[in-house]
Structures are given as structure tokens and as C-alpha cells.
Length: 374
Length: 201
Image (tube, rainbow over all chains, first blue to last red; front, side, top):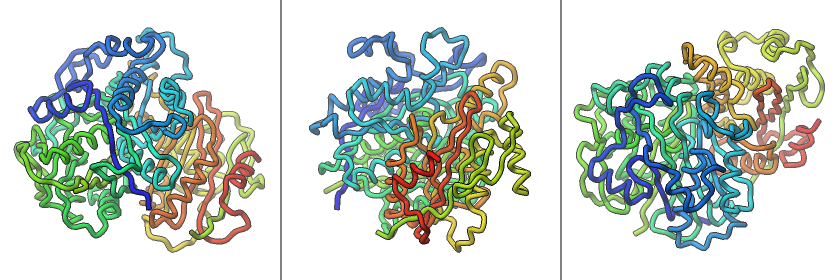
């Protein structure tokens, strides 16, 4: 029976260009979310996690800055870093790239953005192929686009493919960038907070959008952390609002943890919208996990959509390796209908597993459980 | 593992609906949304939410209604999986939404700028809560989709799957091939060749 493990990883966000920088900044309580004015994103002030570092400086060391879009550069930089850091022998003819994204190069639709890229670049599979070809991976990349659960769905998929014996190693990259398209959409839904978002807090009033690229290698070669189980499910309730009963998420959690009782740490989706956080609290409580230390990382990174699952998994795995419970940066007073155990202070504690959750538009839910090998 | 079979196949393209390979409906209407409405009416479907859906969701919804006719399996909500793919993601609606941005951005259009919304719509209609996945591929990858479907049956409680290629391009070119798959024996086993044969009809 093949088991699946996680190996090298990378995060590019406002908090750093590699995992160590990002994790250290999280431990220090730094947030990438800032109030900015950027006419390319919105005519109003917005509270977002925006990468304002010049990406081209870093990218020019590995590729032609004119040939790739901002989205592609971020993804390539992130994947490049994991390929540098990995201790695995990555055979490009036997390694698959999975791209997790919601909107890819959607900013190219903006007529105010001057660029010379063709319309083909709007196709997610075209973008993925360009990224994959940069690294000469032989097989066509796979694109998963399942809204906010894409990152976790990609891990579930990769786990299946490795267990089936189809690949020894799979690189998952999750990337989404800020665009007027996405910002205006969430504004129209009235779901953005004008301040730093407050997941699970009584005063939470919406989410912060963010951008990031995050990559992780899944492998069948034994490593410290194992991808134990994972599952996706649907609410069958509403396309843009979460179910009040948390039925779908509960199902994903049950299918993932099965009979396991001793869950040490939950990294929730925790977008800081009133409905999402309450739904999650209900599902966590119904699953019998109300006492498990739980966080949301959204006040650190914003909601990075297709990148969110991969990014938050990586931070959670660092927490697992370092035996530290990471706080929900901005939660002061719990404001959900179920008494769940939201981590308010980052602290050291021996942990052996982490359960990652995600939910999103289209009624999708996902859960993945990671175990630390002793 | 047990063998899987294609119990029903729906194809909608070129102004026609094909059920298990036989043309069942044709309407020469050139406007995509008008054609989809005529299909809805022809089959006497009653579902008010249909009218607020975008083209991709309408197309997928209609195919699922036809795929699931006479389907009386007594299954739990979590035992039906939906595994979909296309080439253009939600680009058809993305272009429509982009046009509203500088005026009044429309939340009811924006929500359809994700390809997996069609899966959500079908789940709501049928109370399906199983595994779901939306892939974006250059062309229909029958081998991969077939393999993944088998994988889902093997590794989860799934007893029935809607497997589909569902495409609406920026230029309103549309094409859905939807396969109802289960262990219930039929003449057509689920394999790459049979999927491809039906796809290329």
C-alpha cells in the first residue's frame, strides 16, 4: 500500500518569498493585509494582502520578464523555489504539475491594463502549460478550479494519483492574484471588510482578498509528514451562501478523520464573513471537535482563493513540524453560535496532526488530514 | 474492484439533444440561451432557478435532468459524485461580467464566474453531497477522466457519478457530453474507448 507524504514547499506572499520568511513573520504576528489605494484594483480604498515587491527583480534571474504574465511569474518563482529546495530526485518525465487556481490571468481582461498577451492566455490550461513548460515537465499539467476549495481538492487528487502508482512525485501550485475583476465582484457581494478581517470574532464584517503563490511537493518517498486522508463534499444548499447546518463540511470532516478521535489542531477556512465562520463552527462542533485548538490564517494572508488551501496547508505543516499552535491574529471575542476552541495566542504545544478545512462558492467543502511520523 | 458501466449518455451540441446516441430534440434557434430555453420547455422541466443561471449552468443542468430521468436509485446524498471538465472554464460569463465592472458590477453575474458553480447547481437540484471536481483541460482527456472516475468509486462511498465534458466558449460555442456511471450493468462498460466513441459521435 503506497503512502503519500509532503516534502519541499514554498510560499510567495506579502510576508515573504519563501516558506521560512512567511512562517517567521506569522510567528511574529505580522500581517500582509494593509489598507491601500490602487486604481488598478479599485477606485476605493481597500484592505487587501497585496504583493508590492517588484517581482521582476527576482524573476529576471530565472526567466524573460517580457514573456510571462504576473500570475505566471509568481507561479514559476514559487515552483522554482521548491525544485531548488527538494531533496528528492525529480525526474521531469515522471513528475506531474497540478495548478490550483480560480481565475488565472483574469486581469488581462482589463482594458486599462496595457499588455501584449493573446486571449489564449485567459485559458487556465494554456497558463498551466506555459508554467509547466518552463520546467520541462513531460506530462500535461492538470488544472483544478473548484473555487476556494481548489487547493485542498488538488491535494486529494494528487494523493489518489500517487496511491494509484501513476506518479512518484506531484508538485501542486496554488496561485491567484488580485484584479479589479475579483475585487469588484466581492465588493458587489458586500463581503469585503474595510479593515483587517476578524475571523470568528463577534465583530467580523467580511473578508480581505489576498494574492499568493504556494507550492508543495507530494511524494511516495517517506518523509516526516504524511497525507493521511482527504475528502470533498457539496452542501447542496446554495451557490454563494454556506449551509447553516454545516452538513457538507461535516461530511467532508467525517470522511477524512473517520474513527480518529485525537485531532490536535484544526486550520479552518475562516474567511471572516458572518455566515462562513458560523457554518464552520457548527460543522466543527457537530463533528465532536469543539475542543480542538482551531485557527484561521486569513488575517495574515487575506483570502487568496485558489492559493489559499495550499498556502494554509504549508503554514499548518510548519506549525506541525515546530509544535506550535498559530493564533487567529485578530479574534478577540468569539462570535459564533457554537463554543469552539479558537486559538487566540500563538503558543508551543506538542502536536501530531493537523486537519485542514476549506469551503467555498458552489457549495464545495473539503478536508485533509496530515500526520506527523514519530 | 467491480466493473463500472455507462447507464446513460446525454449529448447537447449543434442545436440538438442526443440521448444514448439517438437524436431526441432539435431546434434551429441560433441564440444559445434561446436554444437552451427551448430545450427546457421541450422536456417539460419545471425549475424556477433555471432562469437565473448562466449558459454553462443551464447547459449542465439540462444535461443532468436528462441523464437522471427514470433514475430511481435509492442512494444517500453523499453517494453521488460529479466529475466535470472543460476548456474555457467560466470565460463566457467572465466576459459578460467584465463589461459590468465599470458600470454597476453585478453579483448575480459574478457568482457564475467560477466553473464549478454548475456542479453546485446540480447538487442543489438533486440533493447530491458527494465528491466533486472540476478540471480545466485543453481537450477532453477521456483517459484521465475515466481513470479518475474509477478511482473515486474505489476510494470513496460513491455509488453513482455524473462524468461530464461541459463547454461554453467565449463565442457561445457549446458542447456537453454527460455520462451517468454506476456499477449497474449495461451494455457499455466504462472505459476510455467507450467514452471517446460517445464523445466523438
